[in-house]
Amino acid sequence: MKNRLKELRKEKKLSLVSIEKQTGIKRSTFSDYENGKTEPKLATWQKLADFFGVSVGYLQGISDIREPFESHTMEEWWDKALGYMADVNPQVFDEERKKHEQIKATKQVAPILDVISKNESLPDNYIDYNVEIKDDTTKANIYKATSMLAELGRNSSPEAKADLQRITELLEHLEERTQLPPELGGYE
Image 1 (tube, one colour):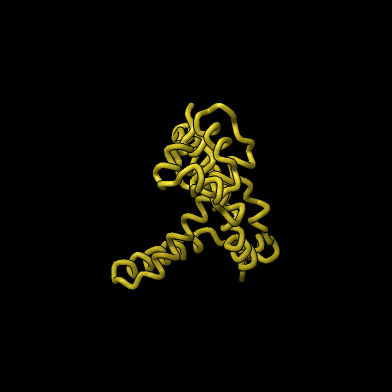
Image 2: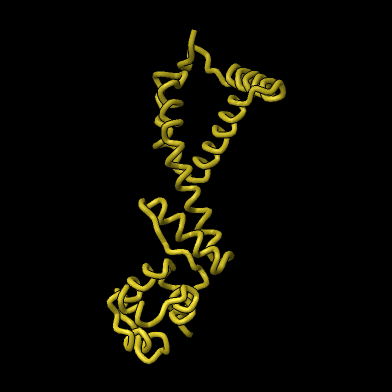
């Protein structure tokens, strides 16, 4: 596979002399890199990728992803990596992306489950839902449902208010049907 050094140099209208001045790489060495006579070390590839403002893979000719890979947190890195992988082969990496989204959702649902656990209507049978709910899909679904409810609560339209009232009534009815009698630990 042919690298893109010459293409990028011409695109930026740079001579071999200006490349040497700006990068410190001798023009004869750079010319050898351009023509595939010698292969730069990884540190040199990175230096040149930074110089041209492209990704190393793009510069080497092994990727069509031109933008350099920049991230400041592990989460940004992972999101960017999944995006790159999806560009290369969406079918292979779609499942990995779904798993990652589920893991993110389970982390976000933890505070919600803490609140539910602390407000459990049966204090003698306190349940820590973060511990009890082990399935990531269930946690992801709880997060999705609570996010949708929160969005509904922020919406001031009459339809949204009516939907929220209906959900509240359904939950109250469900709670009434599932309350334990006092002899089994429920409220008197």
